[in-house]
Image (cartoon, rainbow, N blue to C red; front, side, top):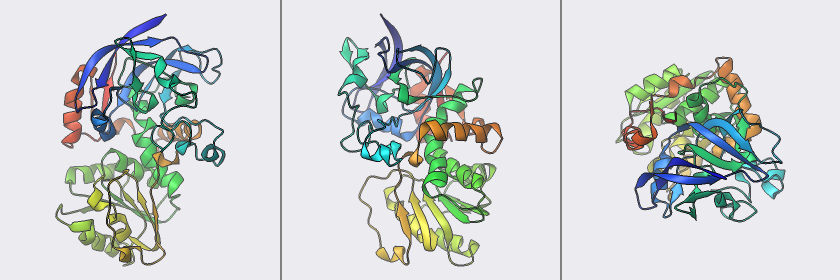
Length: 372
């Protein structure tokens, strides 16, 4: 038996279309999820040019509709959050508590493009009778998705908005985790966040939860800076887009931090030319964190490292989904972080192009595709 549903399919050449796909029943360790909401980020737009057809989307939340016979963590009817960093539990990195960079299952770590059972992660999903890969092994821009049990986390708040839950699974986790798990921001410290889009706002929320005393937001967009203050920034610096390396903005940050620079700085712009910018913002022995995943060549003046500065390039906020997702949801429940307020607009699947246009133009902190 199988089901047919609608999904957004990237053609690998810059375009996409809405197609009918066929999804098989779950195998022993698989879960079938009716996707109710899927968050959008720039990675989804990038996937249009990955050179192969894929079911798009890597953020999502929904309801379990069927499970394999070995699945124990969820049951039919459970509201779940989907997770793309699915650990194998046995490789070197998993054994060292680095499940987010699993050597066997990661869709982004070199040598880990797939599951240990070869192509089993695409056999259950077909387009025109041909197996098709799911973006980041989950493909959430689809009415249904078939995933490994390790790709779902039961939502502690079963009646939570699916739209709010959907953004936890990448954008929120990446930002929040970069502050809490990677940098381990200390109480009473100072921090600066460069770029206050969706990920930057969640870095700010992670810093706030960590009880930093000074949170400085830097952006070239005043509207985004206003939102940053709403989400927890204590200070804001309106930068000039012609400020090379944000060095002038760095001087303002130093003025706000007793002349020495912040304890922590987080780059969330995804602009290669700003890859070294957080080093200019931190004090000696401070920590710079490159959150946005810049992969292009970045030229760095080594004087920016003086002295004893640390530069970290984390993935997915060092996410351990079964631990971190409930932690984030608990902060949401207690009012410590905001999720609903981050969603600027929701869209139907047929309006995906408009959602991309709004995202690329900077209109949205976060756009979400919702399914009936």
